[in-house]
Length: 142
Image 1 (cartoon, rainbow, N blue to C red):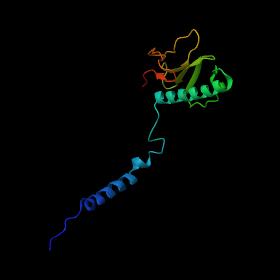
Image 2: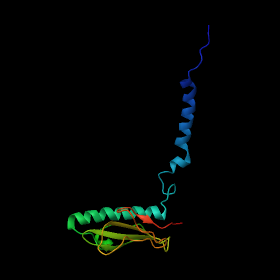
Image 3: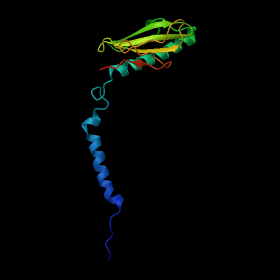
Image 4: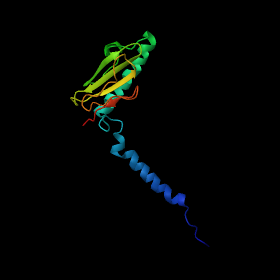
């Protein structure tokens, strides 16, 4: 009688189960839902904030026919340490700047549409000009 060789599935299954068990019980996996596992960088936080302001500005423009001249008119909740200033606003466009207290002298800027007699906003430190409407641009941050 010939001995049968185990199939590759029979040999691989225990290894896969052991790896799966390690992943499920690993502390790194357990922490992925906690704030300790991932922390937003100041630049990513500011970019996300400016995207939220852009969405709020779109809603404001849709309902009122003009963009808001102040952040307080938009009802946007800001993270601690974040500041947003509307640099210019009108019926055809707006410009904004966001700063983070942990990054003095640095900023992120955004614009949508055109504001009469104003060029696109520039970041504070690198003096880079925002080039694409609705896309935040940031200084290099530490």
